[in-house]
Every structure is written in C-alpha cells, then in structure tokens.
Image (cartoon, rainbow, N blue to C red; front, side, top):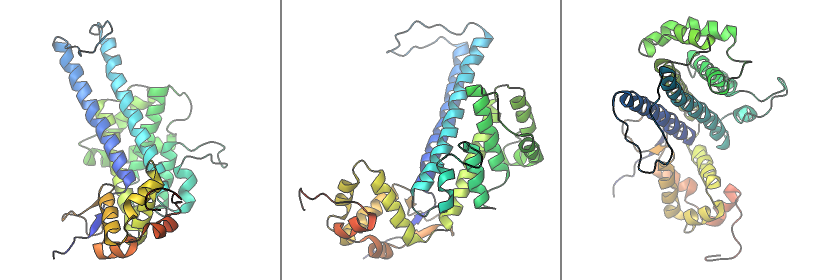
Length: 316
C-alpha cells in the first residue's frame, strides 16, 4: 500500500481569492490597453451582439479617457480584493489574532470616530505581525488606495499624508531595485498633481500589494498548529457553503476514513497541496493525523462545528 502524502498549506483561502482577483485585474488591464493601442491603427471589429451606435474616439483626449477608464477599473478591483482578503482572514477561526477582528472587517473605530480605510487596515495587520513584510509594502498600498480615492472617486480630502509620502521617498532605491527600475518619486509627483497613474505606476503598486499579501499570508500560516487549522478551515468552508447542514451531511455521512477523505479533497481546493516543491516552513499535516482529527461521523461533526442537523429526511 502506497504511503499517502501529507497535505501542505502555503496559502489561505483568502490568499487564493486575492491572487485570482488581483492577477486577473492586472492581466485584463494589459489586454484592454493592448487592444486600445491596436484599435488606433486598425479598423474596428464590433461584437456580434453590439447594439449601440459607436465610432472610434476622435481626439487624443477621448483616447485618454478610454485608457483611464481601464486604469480606474483595475484600481477598484485590486483595492476591493485587499478588502476581501482582510475579511476572509477574520472568518477562519484562530487564523488571526482576535483583537484584529474589528479592524479586518472595517468596523467603526471609536478612537477615530470613523471606519478605518483599507490601507489603515492593511497597515494594522502588518504592524501586529511586525517584521513579516517590508515596511515599503503597506506604504505602497497606502498610495494605491489614496490614488484610487482621488482618481476614481475624486475625493478631495484625506489621501496620503506628508509623512507617508516622505517615507515612500526613502524607499525609492528599494522600489527601483525590486520592481524593475520603478520610479516611486515620479509616481508620487503624479499623485500629488492629481494626474492619472502610468501603467508602470499602477503595475508597481499592484505588484507591491501582491507581495505584501503573499508575505503576510505565509507568516500567518506558519504560526498555526496544523490540526487546529484544518478544523478551522473546514468550519469556514462549511459555513461558506450554500447549505452548511447539507454540506456537513455530504462529507461526514459515513464517518471514518471516507469522511476524512472528503475533507481532504475539499482542503485541496482551498489552499492545500501535495507539491514536492513546497517551502520547508509550510504548514503540513499527515493523512494519518487528518484521519484522526476529522475522520468522524455526522453527529460528532455537527457538535464540533455547531451546525444543527435536519431532524427529518434521508438517513436521519
């Protein structure tokens, strides 16, 4: 009988959602801008379901408006992805410190008499796990959020503080070396002048956001006890399903190794893997230990996860 591999966790479900959303936004932005430049020099090909009258932009300003629309959409998508990442982290019991719960969910802070911004919430998470990420990354997120607010929503107040701008300038060499000769000073000048970000500006800020999430996610997972984490993750996935009671019945109906096997399959879809190239520090759990923890029947599972089973129906 072949030895079953350990299941390993190198990313949380929150990370998977963020990576998919932010990565798609960046890829789609590049596709739209390439399509836009191509359209300038070629005859348009309209979709078959196109029903409105349309013609090419007639002036440089109209072309720029179209480009800026794509930039705005990307900024909104990435900031929303950061917001969702923080919220999902808080929904997996024990994954992050309890005292961060209000911050991660953006609840009103009585100390400042308002809801914290996405960038403030990201900064609080990074500060709590000090040293997990480069200090340059939350500053870059601060610029991204402030620029989004100014460029997309035309918000005149708030924005990046003078001290944050000066701190970012201090990391100019870091951004130049780590992000393909990115010029963070020039980006800050464009932001201060209320100009649109260049594609390089936006790509740099999105990449910095991705690195921040990657680093903090790996750090948080490294702190977990594997047995406790798989129970917490299973709880989250059960409650995130359309019908938690029905999902519990499906997984734990027969109990034993079969139930653990169905949990195992579910975990592989939400951050688990069998990769041989995984990091040495990655969280891992053997199949034998998984069987011992979650190879349980539906009554025990219902009690463990606090889900009320139906009182009537098949198998009751």
